[in-house]
Length: 160
Image 1 (tube, rainbow, N blue to C red):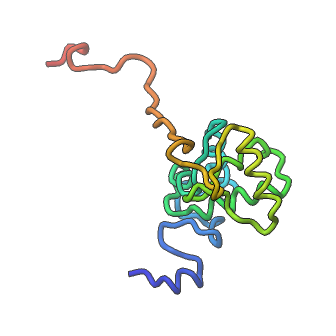
Image 2 (cartoon, rainbow, N blue to C red; image 1 turned 120 degrees about the vertical axis):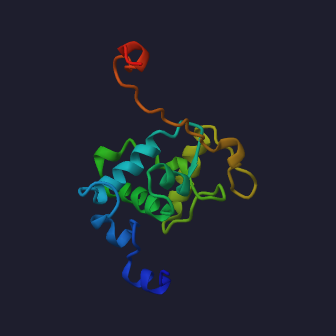
Image 3 (tube, rainbow, N blue to C red; image 1 turned 30 degrees about the vertical axis):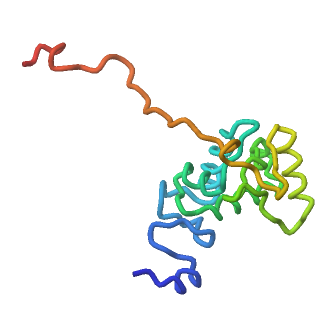
């Protein structure tokens, strides 16, 4: 059984990647520190097409970080720190599970996100929510890569 209070206090949970221990990730490659995790998140966000949105949790799942929606938020927040190589990340296309633009310390950021989304054709209702049934991105599953050449079968190899 996991002691949730201890987990919150120490930021550790077996098999998890939490904000406090992201540099010491126990998932993925040994070098999968903050940049590796964030790069996986940014790769997913770059796939969201114009006029569509994804939720923080959806991005986390697609980046192989199930249950870590907040980690997606931390990664997107880091974009504001002048990381030029990541400037092509369409951060505005990630919203919360209610279809709302998440609140921020600086309210102009919320207005900017809404404005960018509306410019892409995303509609908000009177409560400031996006109808996810209409605008949520549904990614196609990536098919496994086929090996080059034909697969050898028992029939073609002469084996019986």
